[in-house]
Image 1 (cartoon, rainbow, N blue to C red):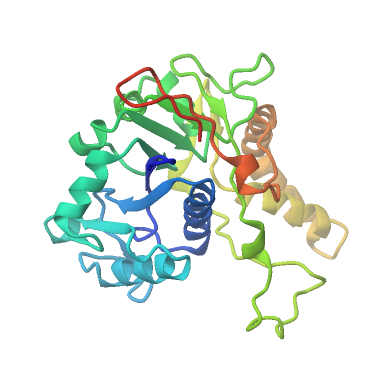
Image 2: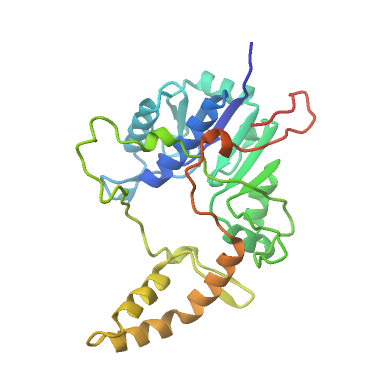
Length: 305
């Protein structure tokens, strides 16, 4: 007897095979599975993948397919993924074409993680379609500016979730009018953060993990009401660095130049982001952090994830 929901998460693990993207997706898959749901990962973004070995976007899906296969095998979902390769005329890897169609045809819920997928006809037949926004502000500004692509993307979903916990509040400056957002947080599988026996010999620095990040992504900057809001943390990092250097030899002039160059950008961006109140990722159990979605009254039963 079926107890959980057939749940499809669409993401971009193969398109952008970075550790952060992958780790986020895997936590959602495992979290929903532990809540008793029948989960599948499907990638159908319509974009060519990035190949880290070649350091370029490519029409060769070999790296993407092998990467997804390895990651899903690691977490016990080796038979529950599919990659639809636009770069190879829509060829499907992982599931067979018939199984791929059956999974989408029988799905109760689709979760568009990080809004990376433009929904197609197969997706639109799924009764509950969740837009799960992990990077707020830019989409809201695009909607306020009347961007037709962003409006179309969000309109294709029945429910809208965001990491922006203060969206829509009186003290939040992010424009929210067209859509109602439900606040959510990233689920965390606690036992996945414990070092395995094979890694226990590798010492962590004071018990902390380290990471690598990109500081500059200028192609995602956006203007709103005459102000420039940046995706990148570059300018804030420059100001912090220069504040540290200003009392050193030559540091005063570097401090002055960097402060002047970054003042307008960081001040306005910081104010907007502060009003959004993005949470620090908490070590929450996946059962607590599960999305709460109440399905509309349809032929499918109301459900709470």
